[in-house]
Every structure is written in structure tokens, then in C-alpha cells.
Length: 339
Image (cartoon, rainbow, N blue to C red; front, side, top):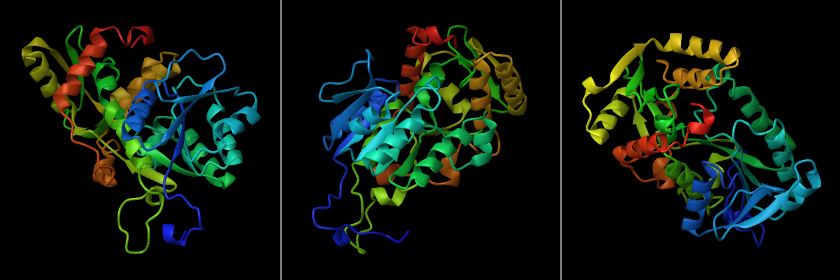
């Protein structure tokens, strides 16, 4: 597609995103996205929620109730929106995202941020290995086939504080028992983002102008990311570096912890067996161990480059978010998921 310029658009064209609809506005990542959008102050924000939903959304956010069994209600809710942001948990009903992107197309929403929020979606081999790649690609392909919207995938890696505190099947740490499972020698680095940084990645992306003003305008714009991924990150970090942060934050010594080294390929295969036997912790283990594999699948910053500077994302304090991960675990945040 040839480069378009704002100066060449029809009279009345707005070279910015004004109206943003978000699905999952009260969820784990959604609330941080909304918070960042509100802080930027550039958008009218609408939360798309199911009829009967009791989720609370932030003050200043409009709410539209929808019935996912009534496509017309979805389309009506999305009319006039410039962008749709979809955040859903893994337990969301199958087909729900497809209904949303079809409604976005029918309503003429030009930009859709599908439910990506993970690693490098263009790494098809790694995506197949964790079972999430093909269905996500199917959604992206469907958006393109519908021909009314463009998509942008948010690559943020695993959420740092969530994954650190989320139990041994994620980043390997069990804070209550002071044990840690390290894959291989613990030096493989991956990209990972905090929840606040993920929120800023979305908000600052949508705060960009849509097109360059003219051929001399080299500043970042939304069209540069049309039908591809934007790559953000808080930390490029190994398990050993995480452990060093944990020791700094807690004041522990290495001798206070039981450290176990496991070959990452064995951990991945074990995770598959656990998952196939009905143990959902195996899904976490296969995902995280695959990301720490030595092929560099988890370090998209090294293979794709990061867009942090283009989006004005700040550098963050690792130890601050290590503290937050430990707080989440010790506060019982994860108790209901059995991790």
C-alpha cells in the first residue's frame, strides 16, 4: 500500500484518533490501558460491556451494554468509534472476538487492536508451540479479509509483576516456600512489560497522528504500524537477573532459597503432558518455558527492535515492580486461580 499523507485526505479528515472503544476495560490489563488513555486526555473512551456485567470502570469512561448474541447491538455500540481495543482473558467464550471484529467492520471502525498482548505474533513457529498463535493469526487475517479495518498487534511480552508473583509455572518463583526453578543456566533474556507500561504502549500508540502530514514528515504515526505489530517492553531480562532483583528487594541471600535448574526443553515437554492431562498449570509452564528457549523467541527486541522511543515509553525501576509482584503473591491475588 502506497504511503498516504494527511495533506492529501478529503476536506474534514481528522488526522487523529478521537473515539476509543475498549472491551475488558475493568480487567487485568484493561484498567491500566484506560488509566493511561485518561491520563493522556486525547480521547473519548467507551467501555463495551455485556448486559448484566458488574465490572466497574473508571470515572470519565462512557459505558455501552451489548448482547454478544445480537450482532446488531455490537455494531450499534461501535458506530462512530475510531479504534477498538480488545482485551480478553483466556476463558472468554470462543468466537467472541470474531463477533467484535465483524461488528467493527460493519460499523466502519478504521483501527482494531485485537486481543494479542503477548510475544512476537509474527514468530509463527513459537506461536504454534504455545497453541495461541494460529487462532490469533486467524483473527488478524479475518480483519484484513473483511477489508474495513486495519489491525495493530500489541507485543508486550509477559506481564512482569503478574508473572513474577504468579507461581513457579510462570517465571519460576515460589515466594512462600522460597524456591525458584531456573531454565538451563538462567541467562536467556526475554522482553517483559509491566501492566502500567502496557497501558502506556496502547495509549501512546493511539495518541499518534494517523498519517504523516506530508512526505517531509518523519515523525511516528499510526499508519506505520498498519497490519503489523508494535513492540514495547519494560525490561529485557533473564531469570538470573530477576532473582538478583528479588534478593535485593527481600534482603535474602541465595542460601535462603532452594534453586533448581531444569533443562528448558524438558520443562516444555512436561508442560504439554500436564496440559493434556487436564492440569491447566501445564499451559502456563509450556508457554513460559517455550519463551525462555535458547532460540530467542522471547527476545523480540533483539530480532525486531523496540518501539519504546517512538511511543515515548519511560524507563522503569525493576526493583519497584519486583516488589509489586511479591506483594501480589503474598496478598492472595492468585489464590483463586490455583497457580
